[in-house]
Length: 351
Image (cartoon, rainbow, N blue to C red):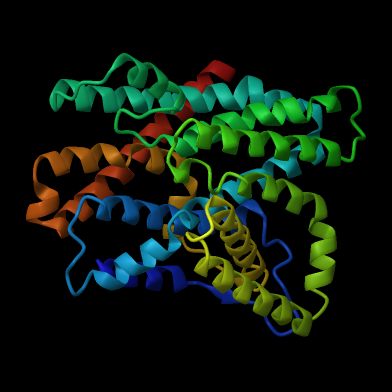
């Protein structure tokens, strides 16, 4: 699978731009510029999940396996960061009306889409492959606390974050000119409480070891102007910061699994900020990356349907390249149909 990864790196580099000396991409956190970054990590996440069904001990697999294992949870770090940043930017512009909409509109829509996907997993698993689920797993899977084969933890913490946004920023209902710092502190504290609650509940480490990156995005939004003024002063300042971030990534990455989830959180902070700072100079963007960036949720939540199906048919063992190609093509097709149908449904309901 190293060949697949190498081909994707070439795709990443297509149409990549580097800012000229003394200049920067001032819109590096715009929707247009973050979409291809999301697309990069959406594909890498797909590749990681697909390879989990395969034997990766071949000579042409070890480099891919090494790269994916090093990245680990960092494949979702930028989704968390960009989500936190984007929500804070919207709150700064729209105030409580946006906060209210997150709980009353955005969360229900996301939950409906997720539950429809869960229904598909239940049909495939239970009725086709005769998998039985106990009642607790079955009922809690609809809020992503457990799984019927579908992705769970990322969706669960996303649902929680939307609720935390409403709780933390409710004060805007009475005071629209708030500077948001108190609200951001409350949100961060709620996230920390959730992290320890999930750990105490016995959830695996990946449920909580990157969650704090979401509030990091909130805080970055609040201090963005100061950060930009400091880092973008000149190239010398910029490359000094980049050098510091590289060492921070190497140092925290080395200790990521040796000092518990707190050290992994430090690695997540360093990685996320390194990517963000790198995009001040480097801009990605082509139709393939944009496509994956446009369909992040549907690709993520639906990808295991073809993986489970084709794996149960034995294709992952008999021909892993065909398994990968078919799962990728099927996931893309499902994602496009899924998003188009829900776009039509939500438009009809709002009209």
